[in-house]
Length: 288
Image 1 (tube, rainbow, N blue to C red):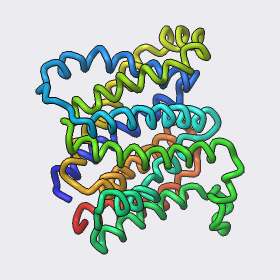
Image 2: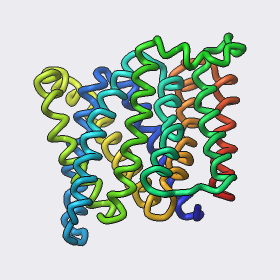
Image 3: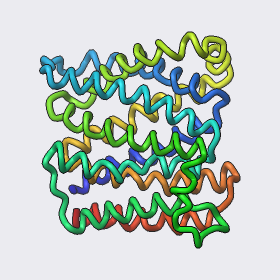
């Protein structure tokens, strides 16, 4: 992986952890996650119109629509997970997409990571898994699996699976569509599809959330768009399995934010596990 791609993903990871923190502290997660589409649609429109309007092939449209639909389910599952779980627990589990991405990348895209690349991905996965162990119960290595009985953990793993799916659709999409055009069109379709269940269900909450948290909504909207724009650009430079794994550095930031700023506690255990993620990122960036 080139240093340029690595830098893009690391910046993206910081933005991603920041906007997830703001979602976690919002009042109504589902309403908040729908509302963040609106500033993006308005603010990014001039840049979209100024971009090169090259024809989009059928494969590009198929990936845009597929990604939009997957992102809708991703937003709903993420909101459900944050409604009942800590940021420092839900975020690492939800960001465990590297468990699945290499499988899809090998089967569908023909990517072949190096041995050290696989080792780095494995360390990222192990770190994310260990972060699911409850403090005080470190001898129970199967704790994250046993925790599947908890609703927020179930939704976090569903989110991870959905993230792995859209990494593949987006990797294919940006191979035939410029990243800015791909993401903006995806956001428009995502907003239209997401509106079908959310607007009738959360009508009153949408108004209240917009009135009380409009500053956070604008911040999250821009952070989310910019974070993923950096990721899409990185996907044009590096294998998707590496991109998905290096993004896990955001887990360190989320653990620190949740344990310290949001006072969720358990800092020592979760930082120790997050160290495996950092080492995995170094391996991927150095020898991947």
